[in-house]
Image 1: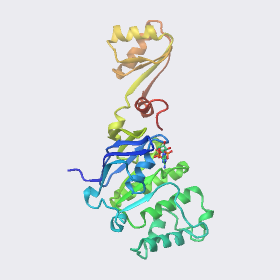
Image 2: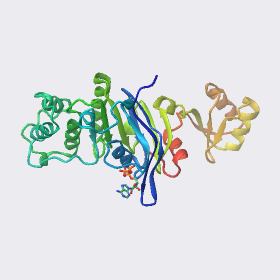
Image 3: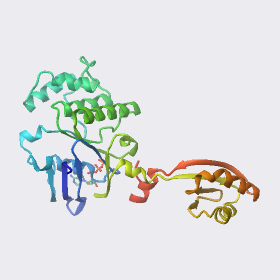
Image 4: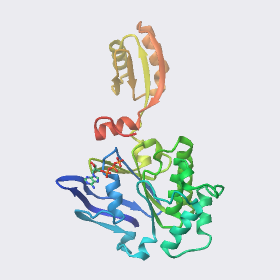
Length: 307
Ligand code: ATP
């Protein structure tokens, strides 16, 4: 049986007359990394704020920890760590001082928890630097350190990679994977860019205009990537005729005046090439490729897609 750490039922938020989260049914399994992927304004932050009791839903319900601790009592808040929007810290204090204050405020203060969190986020070498001297990446990492300090079972992270350079993104991804694999932390993370969360998420929920369009494993999503052989030829119509009459191939697409993509019998591309040449068709190039997830997203959400 699936054990859900987050489950929502028809979760909805309306601001005045505008529905910004529309009957969302999320299923976040224990110990998994779930990424909520959507364009700016899709409703990701509002969803996360509702999960954290920072915004009241208009309708629908939220079940946390399989119903054990859905209330936001102090006890249950300890089970959740979050980074929502820019984390606020004292500018004129160091990371250690900032986390020390937070730890005391939260109660349950264990002596080594600040050091541990700083070490996991690779900030333990920065003990003299004040927060105002931190780079954006370091600030983001400190936000994450604050979120994981009390070893929560569930992490809710709103675009934690925003503003990070590719190395920062790579490192954050590695920390999150480590937390999930080693501590069994469930992670619910939002992003507007597929490349940030591929190789990280087990499950992806795609949200657009407040609606959950798809909730699927990353593996399943990649099935949309079909392999193809692409021929660059002088005459696509003539080439298509050869494919159909000589090779009985019907699964192909004419991309433009010179490009044709073939989705079946890819292993015959050498023989197809020879036949094209025999028929007087000039072949400039033959290559193997795969459909892009971005194209699939464009189909799904229309317009520019995601990523
Ligand atoms: P981004 O990646 O830009 O943060 P998002 O997917 O997190 O986008 P939200 O911040 O949840 O999206 O916003 C969803 C919609 O709700 C937007 O149209 C936004 O303008 C609107 N919205 C958010 N908060 C409020 C509010 N307090 N009052 C009115 N409208 C709001």
